[in-house]
Image (tube, rainbow over all chains, first blue to last red; front, top):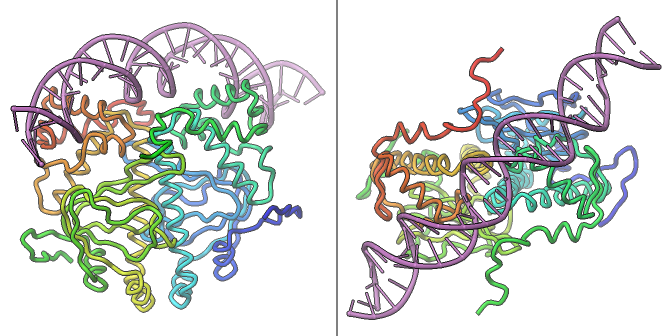
Length: 234
Length: 234
DNA sequence: CGGCAGATTGACCCTCATCAATCAAGGTGG
DNA sequence: CCACCTTGATTGATGAGGGTCAATCTGCCG
């Protein structure tokens, strides 16, 4: 289960993504930090498998609000929500230089028709996205700031580890403001709580560099408030 | 495109749902208030089209949190997120007596294989669910309590109107606590804000009965805070 | 008629937003 | 190569919006 894919970067892809890319992977595209992968309202023409770098997806509302809906790294697929509609429903922006593989809608459509397995895989990916967002809803709806940050750090750590990177030492690719936007907090709050975690010796923060010293204690931050009502059921 | 599927109540179904039900609709099932339509972790065997009544979907987390993820009425389809996995990922519970139409996975699988249109429809429904949840994320992440309730009331009103019911007068099928759970607020806050809206003569509340007197003012509650930073772009 | 779940309202307090000052790190142009 | 400027991060002081605790009220059902 634990592998050290060393190499330039031998990234273990999730099986579904792997299948998708090997069958319908097309054009590659390089992006520089700040580049838009796609924009809100643009015609949906392809999914994108992230090959290198990281991205944020942003949702814009009519009334001028904007909110980060996720950070995405190698091995993840962007644009899924466009599948059902004709346009992209938000922006996707590179947080650093990166590269994606296009999965053209056409190629997808025709292949999916003849490949039940692939079709199943797509449904699964859509469903996973729904799951991911529900988890965020719970976070936004019921967690206090400390818990949100703990979840955020642990989630990042876990995803990086799954890709063969260190689970305890990594670089944040996004600003405090972007983190705050995802978590429903202001950047000052994000900053303060990271500092607090550091003061409590659970982590070390220096700008974008993060060291997780005590993952267990970090984990125990989650749910250390809020009435735990059950414990023992009648 | 617009059809009025008979019945005592002429409920205009969304076209996708209509198609789905007419092609793969199977067993009907009656439920009483409080009954579970499906439970977290149960094997996924069918989607459900709501034919009458209303339901709440609830997400449960490992650490004992639970959160309402949506309220659903006639014409909506439940269980979509199970498509990609083998189990249901939350509970669905009847808020009042109701009836659903089962769409068995088997029937679905085989028919979808030969029906690109139906397949497309399913993708669209999944994508819509993602959209719906993103909207909730923005609500939870960036709106104040008043705004959340305004959005909630307007959304309910609009969905009821789309089904042929009054847009200005309706009965809430859920408790204050359930509303709060969806909106990330405590029931006391929900109650207070409804009272405030009433004091400002925008609505009338009496327990579960709601009258929307001034939909426009209610609409203007949304976004009447929060720095509107652009207005005129450079 | 009594009991109970749900709703309302009040008082108080805590968390987080807001406003603001300072600091650190890059990038750029001289 | 260094001074300058900009962007992002940190930290403090203050206050408001909701959470929490608690009392009361209202239907509703047995």
